[in-house]
Image 1 (cartoon, helix red, strand yellow):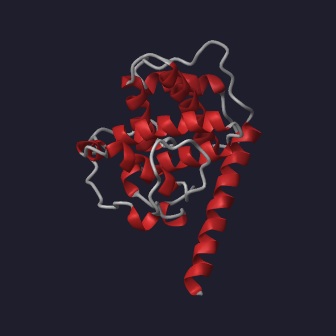
Image 2 (cartoon, rainbow, N blue to C red; image 1 turned 90 degrees about the vertical axis):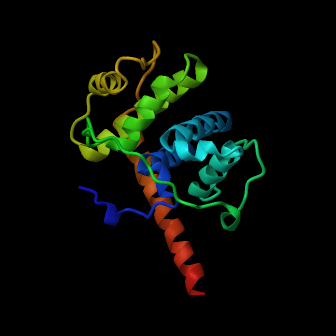
Length: 206
């Protein structure tokens, strides 16, 4: 079992740990256009997860700044704004509104469930299709982190349908990758985060 005290501290807590995990997953994508497309979708989800930020006229710029900050400025994508450095980014925390209801599947966490609900509210189209696919991949990765011994792709599809109230459907021909891919991606992200933390510690001690 993984405890919050054993995890790397979130740079911006407003968006939850699963948004950070989606950013880490985006870094593993080799195709730059695919990374950019996923980054745009993550920004949309961030706006849904933390609606307070949308009260600002420049909220999209703020969301992109937050995305790049959470990615340690190491996400090679097309950004529609000039990216601010960490010391320039507004970090004022906002109070998140949580539902009093129970989490349907604890191994996915509330942030993932919020992202599924946000995606279900999006209009039909290419962006919603791509986000649905990425959410399905994220769900399988999280499931494997919870239980590496067994994972059934049909269960993931069924749980995505349940979480979205039947509104999100994977396109015909969609295929999950094998378990090794997700486990290696998770291990790579963890190693990268660990190396980043070590570099910061060394810099601080200089």
